[in-house]
Amino acid sequence: MKMTITMISVVACMLFVGCQNQAPLTPGAPTGPTVGLVGDSLNFLVATTDPESDSVRYRVDWGNAISEWTGLFASAESCTVGHRWQARGIYAVRVQAEDIHGRASDWSSGHAVSIESICRR
Image (tube, rainbow, N blue to C red; front, side, top):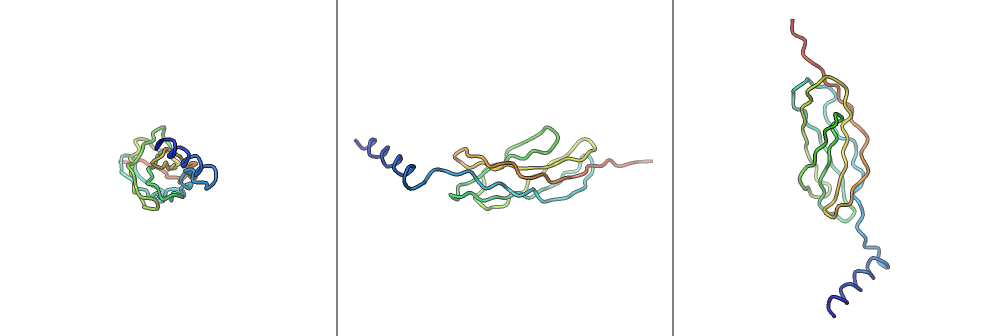
């Protein structure tokens, strides 16, 4: 009986009140340096908010076929992520947010970073 009442409450909430979980807002492009050297660690700041204030984690696409997830952060809390590129090139760093219920945002726009090598003579 108690389970039936709970199920009815959940369905009523979803149909009439609109309490369905929403994905986090699409994060802005990561902020950070635009130039770096091969092998140097570069840090970028990412953040977004979740409509229900759920905790979020971030998936960072480093533009070189490598992506990785962060741990959980409070909604609207900034997160610093870092990466080292091993080859010269121009990379677009972008980020996606996912809330604790598994709802994912769209990908942010990319932040271009040019990775250069040191010339030694």
